[in-house]
Image 1 (cartoon, rainbow, N blue to C red):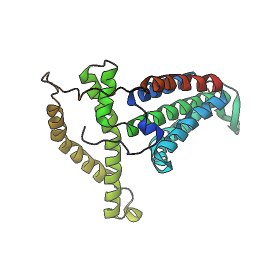
Image 2: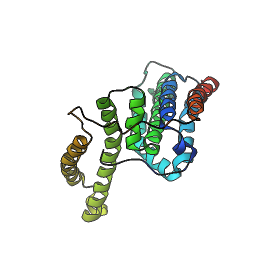
Image 3: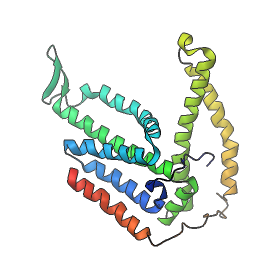
Image 4: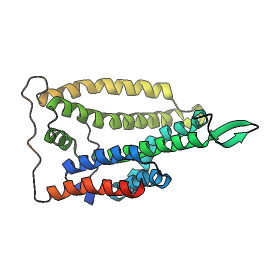
Length: 246
């Protein structure tokens, strides 16, 4: 509502209509749950990352990777707890650290998580906030639901970026090399900043008529001759890719 994570660009993915783009995003994420081969588990997230880099550049790709990297590391840390009774791949003095079944399960989780995260972030950063609401309304979601999804998709990345900026600013003030990362002051400043956003958010909701039945749909997304082709490509390409690598 208050901040748009849209990144301006002229790539082929930017000019793609958001309606088939949302279809592609959901279909790609859905098919990632049914990939079972090793090369499929590698290629699905890899292709998502390549598409992200081609659309937004390697700098933005690295920023996206840094957002999901802690979760990937956490999954790897808990790898020794997965399927303890399976075939041992790595052991230390008779203690099984990694089993084949556990490694397969964690690799599958990481593949799905990275694939879904990258295509979703790509959608969020190549579609304007107002167009997200229009796209969801195109699929006949109620206005309140469309607005809710739009706020969630925009505010979570924005708050994460806000916390990083505050933490970096606090680190410079307190001399991070000597005093460490100032977590508590950063959380305090972040909380105050989030609270101060409440009036602006409420004003933005009232301006859009939320709650009084007089909301604006901001018009409809324009239709053009290539829309059907983009819908077909968004549906066929992920399916073909899935059939090849699954």
